[in-house]
Image 1 (spheres, helix red, strand yellow):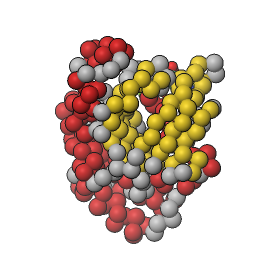
Image 2 (cartoon, helix red, strand yellow; image 1 turned 135 degrees about the horizontal axis):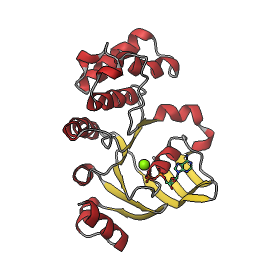
Image 3 (cartoon, protein in one colour; image 1 turned 60 degrees about the vertical axis):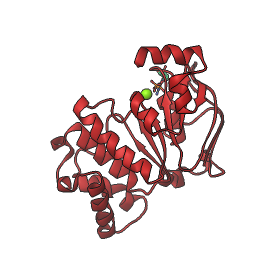
Image 4 (spheres, rainbow, N blue to C red; image 1 turned 180 degrees about the vertical axis):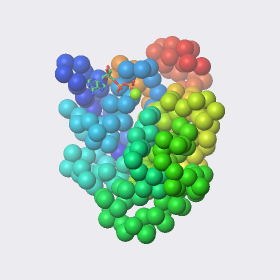
Length: 237
Ligand code: ADP
Ligand code: MG
Protein backbone atom coordinates (compact mmCIF):
# COMPACT_ATOMS: atom_id res chain seq x y z
CA UNK A 1 0.00 0.00 0.00
CA UNK A 2 2.86 2.40 0.86
CA UNK A 3 6.22 1.96 -0.81
CA UNK A 4 9.08 4.02 0.60
CA UNK A 5 12.33 3.97 -1.32
CA UNK A 6 15.66 5.58 -0.28
CA UNK A 7 13.81 8.43 1.43
CA UNK A 8 15.99 11.39 2.40
CA UNK A 9 15.04 14.60 4.16
CA UNK A 10 17.24 17.51 5.21
CA UNK A 11 16.56 20.56 7.32
CA UNK A 12 19.27 22.95 6.10
CA UNK A 13 22.50 20.99 6.39
CA UNK A 14 21.02 18.55 8.92
CA UNK A 15 20.14 15.31 7.15
CA UNK A 16 17.46 13.77 9.38
CA UNK A 17 16.32 10.92 7.12
CA UNK A 18 19.30 9.21 5.53
CA UNK A 19 17.73 6.81 3.09
CA UNK A 20 14.70 4.94 4.45
CA UNK A 21 13.39 1.99 2.44
CA UNK A 22 10.38 -0.05 3.54
CA UNK A 23 6.95 -1.21 2.46
CA UNK A 24 3.73 -0.99 4.42
CA UNK A 25 1.13 -3.53 3.39
CA UNK A 26 -2.63 -3.12 3.58
CA UNK A 27 -3.94 -4.04 7.02
CA UNK A 28 -0.52 -4.02 8.65
CA UNK A 29 0.10 -2.41 12.02
CA UNK A 30 3.59 -0.93 12.15
CA UNK A 31 5.23 0.34 15.34
CA UNK A 32 7.95 2.94 14.79
CA UNK A 33 10.37 3.00 17.69
CA UNK A 34 13.62 4.81 18.38
CA UNK A 35 15.39 7.46 20.41
CA UNK A 36 14.30 11.09 20.46
CA UNK A 37 15.62 12.95 17.41
CA UNK A 38 16.04 9.81 15.32
CA UNK A 39 13.61 11.09 12.66
CA UNK A 40 10.40 9.23 13.56
CA UNK A 41 8.10 12.26 13.36
CA UNK A 42 9.77 13.51 10.19
CA UNK A 43 9.24 10.10 8.61
CA UNK A 44 5.51 10.15 9.47
CA UNK A 45 5.16 13.75 8.32
CA UNK A 46 6.72 12.83 4.97
CA UNK A 47 4.15 10.03 4.61
CA UNK A 48 1.41 12.64 4.97
CA UNK A 49 3.08 15.40 2.92
CA UNK A 50 3.35 17.63 5.99
CA UNK A 51 7.04 17.63 5.02
CA UNK A 52 8.37 17.33 1.49
CA UNK A 53 11.19 14.83 1.14
CA UNK A 54 14.37 15.76 -0.75
CA UNK A 55 15.33 12.47 -2.35
CA UNK A 56 13.88 9.04 -2.89
CA UNK A 57 10.21 8.29 -3.34
CA UNK A 58 6.99 7.50 -1.53
CA UNK A 59 4.30 5.73 -3.47
CA UNK A 60 0.80 5.12 -2.18
CA UNK A 61 -1.00 2.42 -4.11
CA UNK A 62 1.45 2.99 -6.93
CA UNK A 63 1.04 6.77 -7.20
CA UNK A 64 3.85 9.14 -6.30
CA UNK A 65 2.85 11.04 -3.19
CA UNK A 66 3.93 14.36 -4.69
CA UNK A 67 1.39 14.10 -7.49
CA UNK A 68 -1.59 13.54 -5.20
CA UNK A 69 -1.77 16.28 -2.59
CA UNK A 70 -5.53 16.77 -2.10
CA UNK A 71 -6.28 13.16 -2.89
CA UNK A 72 -3.76 12.05 -0.29
CA UNK A 73 -5.36 13.99 2.55
CA UNK A 74 -8.38 11.72 2.20
CA UNK A 75 -6.34 8.54 2.30
CA UNK A 76 -3.98 9.23 5.16
CA UNK A 77 -5.28 10.24 8.59
CA UNK A 78 -2.96 11.59 11.26
CA UNK A 79 -3.13 11.83 15.04
CA UNK A 80 -0.61 14.06 16.84
CA UNK A 81 0.91 14.02 20.30
CA UNK A 82 -0.75 17.34 21.17
CA UNK A 83 -4.20 16.55 19.69
CA UNK A 84 -4.34 19.73 17.53
CA UNK A 85 -8.12 20.09 17.91
CA UNK A 86 -9.75 23.32 16.76
CA UNK A 87 -10.32 25.08 20.12
CA UNK A 88 -13.15 27.30 18.89
CA UNK A 89 -15.21 24.38 17.54
CA UNK A 90 -17.28 21.89 19.51
CA UNK A 91 -16.36 18.21 19.51
CA UNK A 92 -19.02 17.51 16.88
CA UNK A 93 -17.83 20.43 14.73
CA UNK A 94 -14.23 19.24 15.03
CA UNK A 95 -15.24 15.86 13.64
CA UNK A 96 -17.55 17.16 10.89
CA UNK A 97 -15.35 20.04 9.67
CA UNK A 98 -13.04 18.25 7.22
CA UNK A 99 -15.66 15.89 5.73
CA UNK A 100 -17.80 18.94 4.92
CA UNK A 101 -14.96 21.15 3.69
CA UNK A 102 -12.82 18.60 1.87
CA UNK A 103 -15.14 15.74 0.96
CA UNK A 104 -18.16 18.05 0.46
CA UNK A 105 -20.35 15.80 2.59
CA UNK A 106 -23.66 17.43 3.62
CA UNK A 107 -24.01 18.64 7.21
CA UNK A 108 -26.66 16.08 8.23
CA UNK A 109 -24.70 13.15 6.88
CA UNK A 110 -21.43 14.42 8.36
CA UNK A 111 -23.12 14.73 11.75
CA UNK A 112 -24.59 11.25 11.54
CA UNK A 113 -21.15 9.78 10.75
CA UNK A 114 -19.53 11.88 13.47
CA UNK A 115 -21.98 10.72 16.13
CA UNK A 116 -21.27 7.10 15.22
CA UNK A 117 -17.54 7.70 15.49
CA UNK A 118 -17.93 9.54 18.79
CA UNK A 119 -19.94 6.62 20.08
CA UNK A 120 -17.19 4.23 18.96
CA UNK A 121 -14.58 6.19 20.95
CA UNK A 122 -16.92 6.45 23.96
CA UNK A 123 -17.70 10.16 23.71
CA UNK A 124 -21.33 10.36 22.61
CA UNK A 125 -22.11 12.62 25.55
CA UNK A 126 -19.38 15.16 24.64
CA UNK A 127 -20.58 16.13 21.15
CA UNK A 128 -21.47 19.67 22.23
CA UNK A 129 -18.51 20.23 24.53
CA UNK A 130 -15.50 22.35 23.62
CA UNK A 131 -11.99 20.85 23.69
CA UNK A 132 -11.02 23.01 26.68
CA UNK A 133 -13.59 21.13 28.77
CA UNK A 134 -12.18 17.69 27.96
CA UNK A 135 -9.41 15.67 29.57
CA UNK A 136 -6.31 14.84 27.53
CA UNK A 137 -7.52 11.30 26.93
CA UNK A 138 -10.89 12.57 25.75
CA UNK A 139 -9.22 15.11 23.45
CA UNK A 140 -7.09 12.41 21.89
CA UNK A 141 -10.12 10.17 21.35
CA UNK A 142 -11.85 13.11 19.58
CA UNK A 143 -8.72 13.55 17.45
CA UNK A 144 -8.90 9.88 16.46
CA UNK A 145 -12.61 10.19 15.60
CA UNK A 146 -11.84 13.33 13.60
CA UNK A 147 -9.17 11.56 11.56
CA UNK A 148 -11.45 8.56 10.97
CA UNK A 149 -14.24 10.85 9.75
CA UNK A 150 -12.25 11.30 6.54
CA UNK A 151 -12.52 7.55 5.95
CA UNK A 152 -8.77 7.13 5.57
CA UNK A 153 -7.10 4.00 4.31
CA UNK A 154 -4.08 4.50 6.55
CA UNK A 155 -3.84 6.05 10.01
CA UNK A 156 -0.59 7.60 11.25
CA UNK A 157 -0.13 8.16 14.97
CA UNK A 158 2.74 10.26 16.32
CA UNK A 159 3.21 9.42 20.01
CA UNK A 160 -0.53 9.63 20.66
CA UNK A 161 -0.20 8.93 24.39
CA UNK A 162 3.02 10.80 25.24
CA UNK A 163 1.27 13.97 26.37
CA UNK A 164 -1.27 12.13 28.54
CA UNK A 165 -1.40 11.54 32.26
CA UNK A 166 -0.79 7.85 32.96
CA UNK A 167 -4.41 7.10 33.87
CA UNK A 168 -5.54 8.27 30.43
CA UNK A 169 -3.07 6.29 28.37
CA UNK A 170 -5.12 3.10 28.61
CA UNK A 171 -8.35 4.56 27.24
CA UNK A 172 -6.55 5.87 24.16
CA UNK A 173 -4.65 2.61 23.61
CA UNK A 174 -7.96 0.74 23.89
CA UNK A 175 -9.49 2.88 21.13
CA UNK A 176 -6.44 2.14 18.99
CA UNK A 177 -6.72 -1.59 19.71
CA UNK A 178 -10.34 -1.49 18.59
CA UNK A 179 -9.17 0.15 15.38
CA UNK A 180 -6.60 -2.60 14.84
CA UNK A 181 -9.46 -5.10 14.99
CA UNK A 182 -11.21 -3.37 12.09
CA UNK A 183 -8.21 -4.16 9.88
CA UNK A 184 -7.07 -0.54 9.55
CA UNK A 185 -3.55 -0.03 8.22
CA UNK A 186 -1.72 1.82 10.99
CA UNK A 187 1.73 3.35 11.48
CA UNK A 188 2.29 4.20 15.13
CA UNK A 189 5.24 6.06 16.62
CA UNK A 190 5.19 5.07 20.27
CA UNK A 191 7.18 4.68 23.45
CA UNK A 192 4.57 2.22 24.78
CA UNK A 193 6.64 -0.91 24.31
CA UNK A 194 4.03 -3.28 25.74
CA UNK A 195 1.45 -1.92 23.33
CA UNK A 196 3.85 -2.12 20.38
CA UNK A 197 4.68 -5.71 21.24
CA UNK A 198 1.04 -6.65 21.61
CA UNK A 199 -0.52 -5.06 18.53
CA UNK A 200 2.14 -4.56 15.90
CA UNK A 201 2.86 -6.84 12.96
CA UNK A 202 6.26 -5.21 12.44
CA UNK A 203 8.61 -2.94 14.29
CA UNK A 204 10.62 -0.27 12.51
CA UNK A 205 13.51 0.74 14.75
CA UNK A 206 15.03 4.08 13.76
CA UNK A 207 18.27 5.59 14.94
CA UNK A 208 19.98 8.72 13.61
CA UNK A 209 17.84 8.97 10.47
CA UNK A 210 18.27 5.34 9.49
CA UNK A 211 15.98 2.34 9.61
CA UNK A 212 18.19 0.09 11.70
CA UNK A 213 15.77 -2.84 12.10
CA UNK A 214 12.61 -3.78 10.23
CA UNK A 215 11.59 -6.69 12.35
CA UNK A 216 8.98 -9.07 13.66
CA UNK A 217 8.01 -7.75 17.13
CA UNK A 218 8.57 -11.10 18.83
CA UNK A 219 12.16 -11.09 17.60
CA UNK A 220 12.71 -7.38 18.11
CA UNK A 221 11.69 -7.35 21.76
CA UNK A 222 13.22 -10.70 22.74
CA UNK A 223 16.34 -10.81 20.65
CA UNK A 224 17.11 -7.64 18.65
CA UNK A 225 19.72 -8.15 15.99
CA UNK A 226 21.57 -4.87 16.30
CA UNK A 227 23.58 -3.48 19.21
CA UNK A 228 21.80 -0.15 18.82
CA UNK A 229 18.38 -1.73 19.32
CA UNK A 230 19.68 -3.72 22.29
CA UNK A 231 21.06 -0.58 23.92
CA UNK A 232 17.80 1.29 23.29
CA UNK A 233 15.61 -1.48 24.72
CA UNK A 234 17.81 -1.79 27.80
CA UNK A 235 17.15 1.89 28.50
CA UNK A 236 13.39 1.84 27.96
CA UNK A 237 12.27 -1.58 29.19
P1 ADP B 1 11.85 12.11 16.55
O1 ADP B 1 10.41 12.23 16.21
O2 ADP B 1 12.41 10.75 16.34
O3 ADP B 1 12.15 12.61 17.94
P2 ADP B 1 12.18 14.25 14.63
O4 ADP B 1 11.76 13.70 13.31
O5 ADP B 1 11.22 15.12 15.34
O6 ADP B 1 12.67 13.04 15.55
O7 ADP B 1 13.51 15.08 14.45
C1 ADP B 1 14.66 14.58 13.79
C2 ADP B 1 15.66 15.70 13.63
O8 ADP B 1 15.14 16.67 12.75
C3 ADP B 1 15.99 16.41 14.93
O9 ADP B 1 17.37 16.72 14.91
C4 ADP B 1 15.16 17.67 14.83
O10 ADP B 1 15.77 18.72 15.52
C5 ADP B 1 15.15 17.94 13.33
N1 ADP B 1 13.92 18.64 12.91
C6 ADP B 1 12.67 18.15 12.96
N2 ADP B 1 11.78 19.03 12.45
C7 ADP B 1 12.50 20.11 12.06
C8 ADP B 1 12.18 21.36 11.45
N3 ADP B 1 10.91 21.67 11.12
N4 ADP B 1 13.18 22.22 11.20
C9 ADP B 1 14.46 21.92 11.50
N5 ADP B 1 14.85 20.77 12.07
C10 ADP B 1 13.89 19.86 12.35
MG1 MG C 1 8.78 12.83 17.33
